Amino acid sequence: MKRIFAALVVLSICANGCKDSGQDTNPQLDDQELSDLFSDRQSLGEIQISDLDEASGLAHSRSNPLYLWSHNDSGGDPVLFLMTEAGADSGRFVIDGAQNLDWEDVAIGTGPVPNTNYLYAGDIGDNRGERPSRAIYRVPEPDLNVADIPATSTLSNVETINYVYEDGPRDAEALMVDPSSNDVYIVSKREASVILYVLPFPQNLAEMDTAERVTVLPFTQITAADISLDGSQVLIKNYLNIYHWVKTGNESIGELLATTPSKLNYTVEPQGEAIAWHTNGNQFYTISELANNQPVVLYSYSRN
Image (cartoon, rainbow, N blue to C red; front, side, top):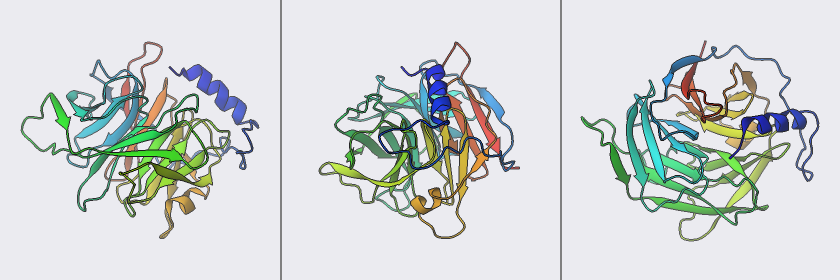
């Protein structure tokens, strides 16, 4: 699979003028000053789930804020792992009928039924940019306010959003859901300046949907993204940096991301590919894949 060393080399090259088929229309922002809006990281604990060794996505539960969701990268079972904020193993939830060809992110947000929170598992990875289509699995988040969460459970009532990109295959690792519209956003990974796409609500479940190109973003090697519970803040990260946007009015996600973000404090992880807002909007989490035999740790960053 991917290796952090190679990713850092690509980042270094692209930050200094790498081009890709005319897609690079904006300069990189890696040299901007750091914001002190959020604190340095705090370790919440080592992940105590031996099977979770390629943690590629992260989402904070809306059902019970004591828990977070994560999953492995490509080739594993279609399983979402549940953990506490201390990293304790709290259960495995199989998504019925799903495949894990290259799961790269999980999002949590609104969907077709009002007042229902959904988990969105993104089978959106494509290292070589050649998969003919992608899939996002949407399923209601289970009730985690129960006395005994089952060690293993199956999530049913799964909806599959099969889609293509309007301008051809892309590799992507960042998925997020806009609570104001139920639109699903995807950020590509490997271009010198990556591309924001949208699957507008209602997504097509009967036939192949098309992810529409929204805008080009001046970053590369994007590995994760998330929109806050109230829809007012966006986080996007690559291996080296975390970027933060906050709305000043009723602008759309595309309009918001076309503005200059803040670059937040971030201590580089061995292979950091996941980020998630806390439901309070004043804290976010990061996690890394297992790399170089270093422990996998759940980290938290809090608003100053």
